Amino acid sequence: VGVVGAGANTAARHIPLLQGIDGVEIVGVVNRSESSSSTVAKRFCIPKTYGHWEQAVADRDTN
Image 1 (tube, one colour):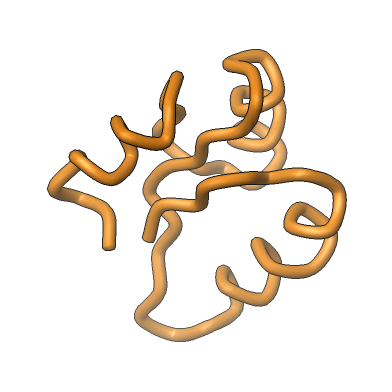
Image 2: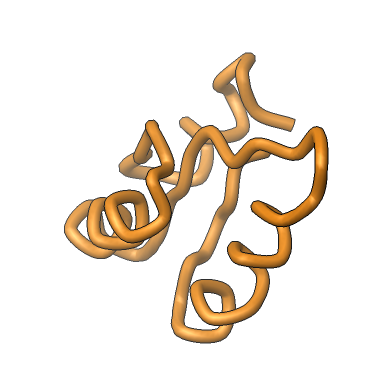
């Protein structure tokens, strides 16, 4: 799964819940800035960040 938009609510609720579902892997994240995308990715051990949501959608590893 790729996460588009990783603000406070998403980071506090959605990402931890998604990571707790068997068979779900968050492979990438994109937020308003690359810096904030990197911060969220590091916090949740998400392997990829994107500079724009279109990159996340185009990535064949994301659903």
